[in-house]
Length: 138
Picture (cartoon, rainbow, N blue to C red):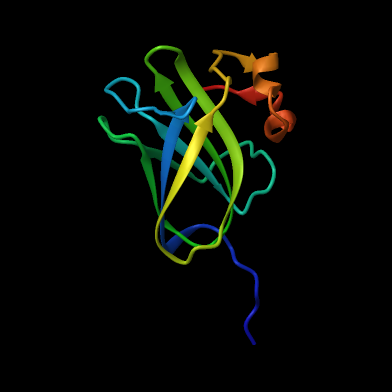
């Protein structure tokens, strides 16, 4: 008998290519400001730690998150906009694809990095992130 549960994690055949954007403009990794993805497996709520950290490559407009299994993930993504400074986005994602590469646009709203706990209106601006009003910024 086979169960129907799918557990997220590495060891799968799918790669997410996460494309950070601010106001739909691509955020490119540059030396000193590398785009990064922090990934939590089997999560539906904002995690306090992450299972996988992936740094993008300088000169690229995306971060590859490789070898994923279908399942529930929480992704925290960072990027640096040369005009507006550092940005981040935190969101849940359910991966259903079992193989290949999946392009994922990560839109950075007006959530700038703060070098402290962020409890400003910019961090609570959209309904999707309303529960994220206290985020530790690294």
